Image (tube, rainbow, N blue to C red; front, side):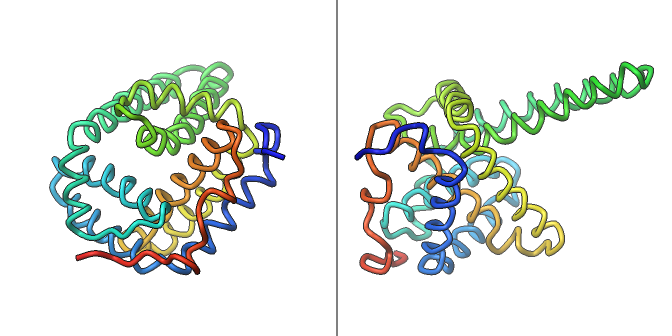
Length: 229
């Protein structure tokens, strides 16, 4: 029987995460490699958003059992240069609006300001959760569009709230761990999050199409990707 949307809840999220963790055993070194490439490419501000886009592109390729290397990273950085910047500017605008509102309401009477600050903090959490889907969704499009990707990311978040929340909590744990151990950001955390969320979107897209995600890609232990030069 094909899976249906109602199956993509908390249990499905844990199953998808568990499979992603198993996959990391085979591609952890490759993820660290492209993470370092992303960090080095982000030294210049102008290349930071495209480098992040390239990180998502290569972690998606890894998820599909395809070999990747530094040439693939540079090719993706070039291909998604302007898309990456459109995505970054959208987030910068949203961040500016959120920050301005938090500052504005902090000067109001606490009985009014605190609930409104809480509301905007909640909206910030929702925005961040949706954005984790956004670029993986964009990569599934025939013609990449940030606007369409954002809309579809919102739809996925609303349609599969327990799946989305579970993934967000796991991502939050890795972020918290990386705050405690800062060098993880340079070594693995961004690539790991991108890999996990590419897998999450793949899982949900398969379910949307009435397919069984666990049957679509052969395991790494039978087709482990090798990095290319």
